[in-house]
Image (tube, rainbow, N blue to C red; front, top):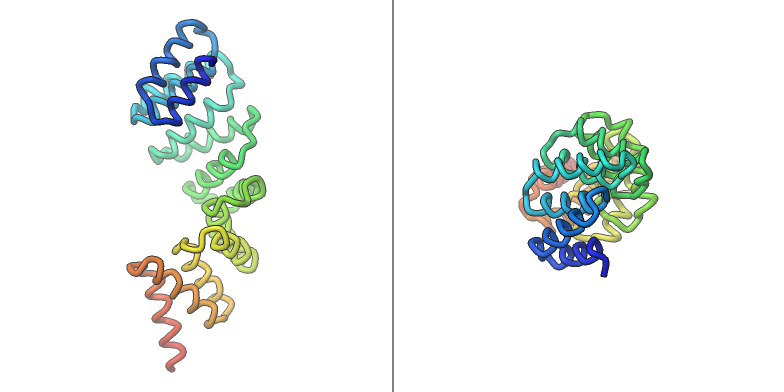
Length: 219
């Protein structure tokens, strides 16, 4: 088995030291191959060696400026460090270099949301949902983004898809409750607030929403 493939297998098995050893051997054998540097960076990232991982991604980009996976991996590191502006730049570069995966579109959208650029985020979240319609978190964030732009019917559609896949997504139920409340459908709003509380009894916002509706019904 080729060394990079073997290293990826070790990563999938959680054998980080074995993976690192194999990737380092691959780098020594072919020091101009960007892929080995990306893979070694991914091992470093997985074990929390963030700064070292970034250096390996930078090395990969230096060897191959079209190494889209290096930009994507660096973007994830920057996002996790809450450096959302740099994360956005990396995910945009990954897209320009041919990384047209649901995850890259999703993470670019999430970076823009963190930068309070919800309108700009929407098409990337939409594309992520189109490419991976079975990922409840992508559907949830897309639905949430639609709701924040007051596209309520479209938001309900995406949030309903989310709970079809993950019926125990408490935040999706809560936001469905809010959306139905916005449409003055108190029966459906109450149903989803109660679902959220059944899943997560300490969901304070769902509890508050439920109380508001019950107070209105008792008036």
